[in-house]
Length: 178
Image (tube, rainbow, N blue to C red):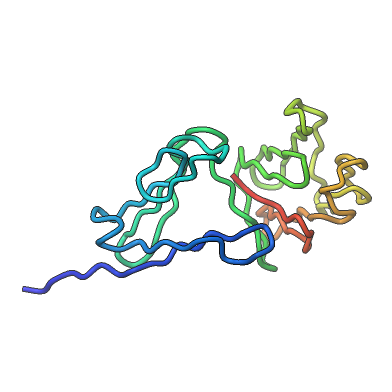
């Protein structure tokens, strides 16, 4: 009979300057069932003074990896888009850049970006041209020239093999997908 031994994962919380704020280990002692919750009242990593929901998300140890699950409470979980390969978009994906939220609707090479301003209201809709475009304060698609959190050429959308991809172009504040 073989015995399964769960691995030990370290969850690191970063401060805005990139330094380690705190770390927690996801192992038998901290999460006997392999689940570590995050939120204001969560068992696991609690953030009592934060603007999170009581149970915002959970980390699940599958044995070979850790999966982040959005518990659909509060504002949801937003992941930073990184890497030069970009992120393939699916119908309904939401991307946050600067103080703007973009909702992507479409399939194949027929896409529309629904732009919501800082107040959450729909500002405009923009069809994505076949060649794609740059997004920012001073780009082909200008979202809000007064948004100081938005870079001049913050991001780019482009079709790669008939798949719409989102590329963060190294903006200081980054781009996140929900």
